[in-house]
Image 1 (tube, one colour):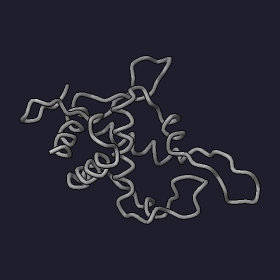
Image 2 (image 1 turned 30 degrees about the vertical axis):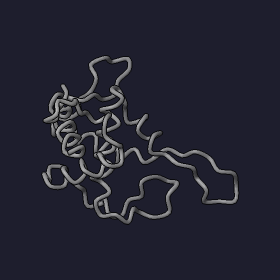
Image 3 (image 1 turned 120 degrees about the vertical axis):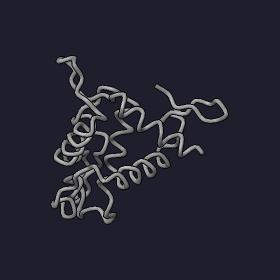
Length: 150
């Protein structure tokens, strides 16, 4: 399903710069107020490689928007793949840096919230697993993408 601008150009999430789309979609989700932000969100770190929690109060909406975009671009992405995507290097000691995955609890919570909204669903193929976009989720993303391009 693709959204069409007034000029006839087809605009999808892939046509919009990632940073611009994620910022707009996070604001869209915050305005709808459908995602449940837990109380522990203001204290939790995004991974073991971080020293502090994020400064931005709306970081959960930004992460949820980013997860939506990742699943839109690459169907079948699961929590493990998203943990790798949001991971970073660990440089807290004097030893060499090593890659560390991001927190799974945060990603799992947000993916479950997106599933409850009906924007993301589990893949039927039991071998691969992962999540994929629903038609509603795709429509929602494309609507915001058209607004970003306008």
